[in-house]
Length: 390
Image (tube, rainbow, N blue to C red; front, side, top):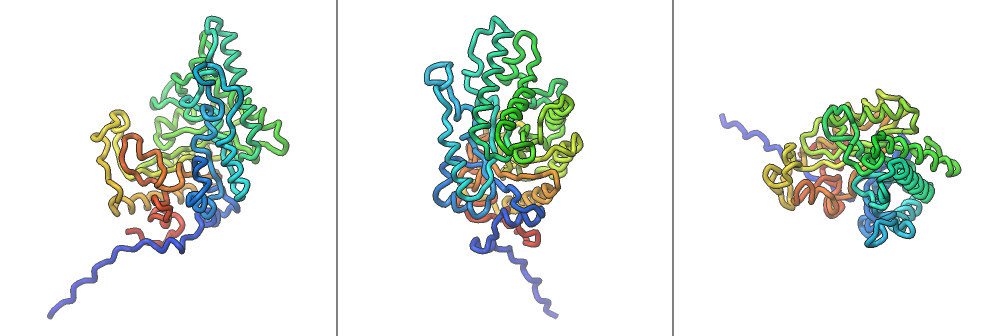
C-alpha cells in the first residue's frame, strides 16, 4: 500500500497592509477605553509625509523624542555657561500644532534628565553651599514653570527621567552622579531633594493652568529596566518615599526597552509593584521597543561585536521576527489592566530607531511597522489575537 505523503505546512503570509485596522482603535476596543492614548515618540520631521499619514491612522498620542528635553528647549548661550536669552519652543510647538490639528493627545518628555541638563543650571560659586544650592533650586523652579505653562495641553509629564541607580537593591536608590544630585548634595545636604522639588514645582505650575489637575495632567517618574527586579526595587523605593512625603506624583512611566526573549512576567511585576504602592498611581508604558538581538549584559558594557550579537542585516530572519511578534502580543495582553492608561513606542516605524546605534551600530527592526511603514508580524500579533504567526 502506498501511503500519501503528509501535507507540508505552509508558512503564513503577511496580510495585505491595506486591510490593517487602526492600531489605536484596536487597542481602545480591547482595553474598553474610548480614546485610549496609543502613542509614538517622534521628531518634528515625522509630522510631514508618509510618517504623518502613519501617525494619523494608527496613533492617538505623540511624545517628543528630543524636542522637549531641557538641552533643546533652553540650551546654554553659545560659548558660555549662561542660559540662552529665551527658550526655544519652536521644535516642540511643531508637535503641539500637529497633535491639535489631528485630534491627538500629547505627552511631555521630559522636564528633568541628567543627560540633557545644560550647564547653566549648575553654574555659580560653590564656595557658599547654601546660596549655590538656592540658586540651582530657583533655576529648576523657573524652568519647570516656563515649560509646563507653555504646554498646557499635555496629558502627562515625565517630570524626572532616569533618577534611579542601576546598582541592584541599592541602599541609596538614587543616581548619585546626576548633576542635579551633586548640586543639591553640596555642603552635605540631601542630594535626592531635587526629585521632590521637581514634582512640587510641576504641581504648582500645573495649578496655574485653568482646568488642569492630576486628572488630566499626570506627573510621572520615568525610568528604564523596571522589569529587572534589582532596578525595580530602587525605582519603587523612590516612588514610595515620594508618596510617604506627600509629594504630588501621579504615576510611573516604564520605558520597557526590551529584547526578544524578555520575561513578560517581570514586566507584569513592574506594573503590579506600582499598584502595590498606591491604587491612585497609574502606569504608563513610555518608550516601548523590542530589539531583535538577545544580547547578554556584557554587550552593554563592552559596546562591541562580540559580545554583542552580529548584525542580522537588512532582512532579519523570519524566525526572529516571529519571536518578536509573539512577545509583542504577550506584552500588549499584559498591558491590558486598569492601571495602564497610556502605551507609547519609542519610535514610529523601523526607519527611525535609536537601536540602530545602541548598544552598537547594526541594523535593528524593533517596532510594529517596517522601514516602509507597513505592518509587520508584530503589528498583526497585537491587533488580531487569532492570527497565526510564522
